[in-house]
Image 1 (tube, rainbow, N blue to C red):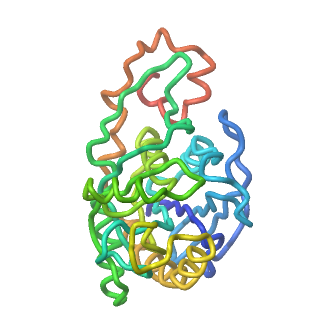
Image 2 (image 1 turned 180 degrees about the vertical axis):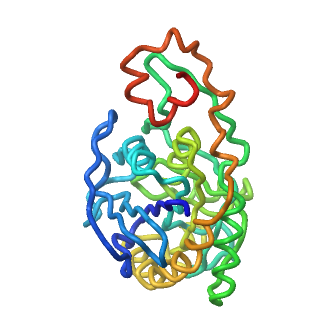
Length: 285
C-alpha cells in the first residue's frame, strides 16, 4: 500500500489513533521543515503527519519553509498528500463548519519559494489540474458517508497573508466568482506536483472572510473556534479516506517531470543532482 502524507493546518497539530508512532527529523537541502514528522500507521496504513505551522502554531504562512516540508515528505516515501486547511468562504452557500474540496487554485502569494527548480536547473511542470481527482473523489464520498457537510470542487484563492483581506479585496475575489480563500495550499500543491506527489485539499470553512453584511469580519479567535469544532470531523474524514487512498493504483502526478526538465542533464551541477536526486534522479541517470 502507498504511504500517505497529511499536512495539518490551523488547529490540527496532531492526529489521535496513529499507532507505532515515532517522530522523525528530516534534513533537506532547503533547510528545516516546520516540525518533526510524525510517522506511524492509521487504519492500517503508513502515514506521515506534519503540522505546517509547527506545533504551537509558531510559523507564519509567509515564513513556512514549503520546499523543506514537501521535500521531507518525498524523502520519507510519501506518494500522496492530503492537506487540511482553514479557509474563508466567498459564497453564501459555503457556510462555516462546511468542508470544501477545491479543484483549482489562484495564487496571489509573492514571498514564497514555490519551486525546487532554480539556481542552475529549470523545469516547467503541467499544472492545469493542480489536485488529484481520485483523492478528491474519495474525500468527498467519505464526508458524505459520514453525513458531514461537504462541497466538491471550487476555486481556492491563495493570498499572501498573514493579514486577512480588506473588504475591497474580498469583494474583488467575489466578483471573480471564487469560492474560498486561504494562505497556504497553492504553494504546497505546486511543490507536490514538482515532487511527483499527488495532492488534494480538505478545506474547513471557518468564516465569511469580511464581505458578509451580517456575519462579523474574520478574527483569529473565530477561525480557531470553528476549526476546533471541525477538527474532529476532519479526523473522521481522514480515517475513512486514507485506507482508500493507500490502494489507488496510479497517480498522474507520478509522471509530472517526464517531459518537464528543460536543462540538459550535462549542464546540471553535481550539487543539484545530489540535492534533487530523490526528485529528478530517475530522469537524469
